[in-house]
Amino acid sequence: MARILSCTLAAFLLGVQLSTSAPTQETTQACTAIANALPGKVLTPGLLAQEYAYETQQYWNNALRTIHPACIVQPESAQDVSAVVKLLIKYPGVQFATRSGGHDPNVGHSTVEDGVVIAMTNLAGAIFDPATNLAYVKPGGEWNTAIGELEPSGHVIAGGRLGIVGVGGLLLQLGISFLSTQEGMAADNIIGWETVMANGSIVNVDAATHPDLAQAMRGSGSQFGIVTQYTVKTHPIGQVWGGLCLFDNSQSDKLYAALHNFMASGEQDPKAAIIFTDLILTAGLGTKLLFSFYDGPTPPTTGPFADFFKIPAIECLPRTQKYSELLFANGEFIRQTLSRSSFRTYTIPYIPTRPQMYAEIRNKFAKIVLPFLTPLRPTSEFSVDFQPLPSLIGAISESKGGNALGLTASDPDRLILEIQGIWQLPEDDAVAYDLSKQLTDWLDTVVPTWLDEAGMDRNMYLPLFMNDAAGDQPVTQSYKDYAKFKALQRQVDPEGLFSTRAGGFKY
Ligand SMILES: Cc1cc2nc3c(=O)[nH]c(=O)nc-3n(C[C@H](O)[C@H](O)[C@H](O)COP(=O)(O)OP(=O)(O)OC[C@H]3O[C@@H](n4cnc5c(N)ncnc54)[C@H](O)[C@@H]3O)c2cc1C
Ligand SMILES: *[C@@H]1O[C@H](CO)[C@@H](O)[C@H](O)[C@H]1NC(C)=O
Image 1 (cartoon, rainbow, N blue to C red):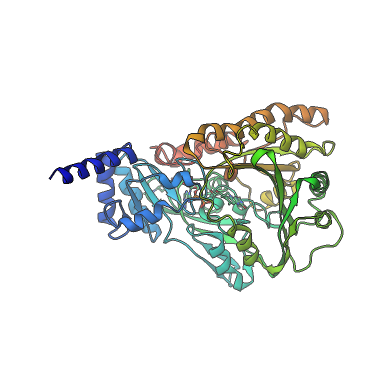
Image 2: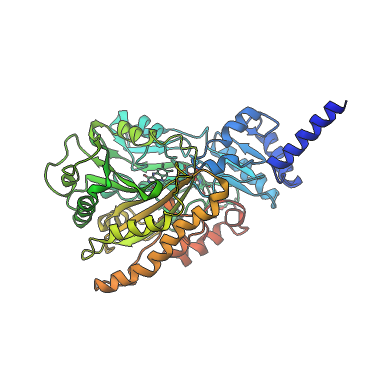
C-alpha cells in the first residue's frame, strides 16, 4: 500500500515537474468536439498516444519538441480543416497552431502548449498536370517528397534549397529558391490557394476572384487562412550541377571578394545560385560553406560563379545530378540536429563601394558570440548566411502579379541575411536569442551610415524576409503596403481567429 502510494506520489510529482500547466476545460471540450467530428484523426496524450508523441517530435527546433498540445488533428482534406475551423469558432478561448513541415523555429508559431495543433502530415504530396503545366501541391511533407514526385515529369517548382525543409510554411512565408533568379520567389509562382478562411468556408483564392488576397498570400504567412492546396506554375528541369563546398577561414578574403563580385553580376547568369554560410564555432573558430546550384548539367568555366570554385576548398562536392538528389544531399547531414535553434534576419543593401561589408558583419558577429562559444558549449554554433536578392527577382515577382513585400523591377540589389544560432541548454535560451539580436541592433545603426558613405539612399526599401525571421521581428510591419494588408486581414478575419488565436507573424 505504502509502495503504491509512494509510486503514485512520485508519478504525481513527476507530472507536475514535466508539465506546468494543463489544457483549459474549454480546450479539452474543443478537442472532444473535433474528435467526434473527425473520428480517428485526433491524437491526444491519452488517445493514440504513440502517434501523438511522434507528431510532437516533428519540429526542426528541439525546443519545440518539448511542447505538449492538448490535441493534434490530422486532417485529410480541406473539408476536414473546415470542420475544425468551424468548431474552433465555437470555442473562442482556444489557442491553435497550424503545422506543415515544422521547420519554423519560432516558439508559438507551429505548435502550442495546451492548444490545438492542426498537422498537415496526411495532406502532403505534389502532382504535375501535363495539360496545364501546373503543379498541385499539398502543404505537408518536405521538399524531398514534393520535388521527388514532380521531377519525373521534367518539371519542378521553385521551393526549398534543402530537401528536409517543409513545404507549406515556406510557400506562405515567400520562399527563396535556387530557381528564384529565373522564377521569382517561391510564392510568386502560386496562382491558386485552396484555403479554409476564418469563417470556415473553403475558398479557392486566385487573382481573378480575389486580386488583393492573392497578392497578400504571397508572403503573409498564416494570417489569411489555412491553405490545403497550392496551384503552382512549374519550371522545366533536367540534370543540374551543384553541391556543397567547405572552406577554412584562411580563404576568407578570396571568398568575400567572390561573393561581392557575384552580387555585382547576379543578373548575368540567372541559372546560377548560391548560399554563402559563414559559420562561427567554439572559441570563435570558423569555416565557410558554399551551397551552389547551376540549372544545367555543366557550369560555366569563367565568370563570377565559376570563380568560387577556383578558391582552394577543404572539400568540394558539386557534381552533375538530378535536382532532387542535390536537395537531398544539401539537407540530409543536418536532419537530426537535436539542438535548440533560432533564426533572425536582416535585409541589407548591396553596396558596390563596400566590398568589406561581409567581413565587417562576420567579424562583428564573431565578437558578439565569442563569450558564449566557450569549450563548455562545444556543440553550439552561430552562422550568418549571405543570400543574394538581386533586383532581377523583383522584376520577376512584379511580372507574376506581385507579392506582399511589393518586390518590383525598380528594386535595388539586396542580400537577405539569415542569422542562425544552435545551442543545447534551455537555460541558455535568453542569452542565445539576444546574441542574434545584438547583431541586428548593430546593423540598424551601421547600415544607414554605410549607405550615406556610399552616396546611396538611406531610405532604401529593405523589407524583412519572413521565412528567416525571429518571432519578435516586425516582419509585416516592414512591408510597404502593411496598412493595406492589415485592413484586408481584419476584413476577412473580423473576429481575429488567425490574428489573435493562432501562431505566426501578425499584421
Ligand atoms: C534547414 C532549413 C533550411 C531552410 N531553407 C530555406 C530555403 O531554402 N528557402 C526558404 O525560403 N526558407 C528556408 N528555410 C526557412 C523555412 O522556409 C521556414 O522555416 C518555413 O517556415 C518552413 O516551412 P514549414 O512548412 O516547415 O513551416 P511550419 O513550421 O510548419 O510553419 C511555419 C508557419 O506557417 C504556418 N503554416 C504552416 N502551414 C500552414 C498552412 N497550410 N496554412 C496556414 N498556415 C500555415 C505555421 O502556422 C507557422 O506560422 C529553411 C529552414 C530550415 C530549418
Ligand atoms: C467566408 O469568408 C470569405 C472571405 O471573406 C468570403 O468570401 C465568404 O463569402 C464567406 N463565407 C460565408 C459563408 O460567409
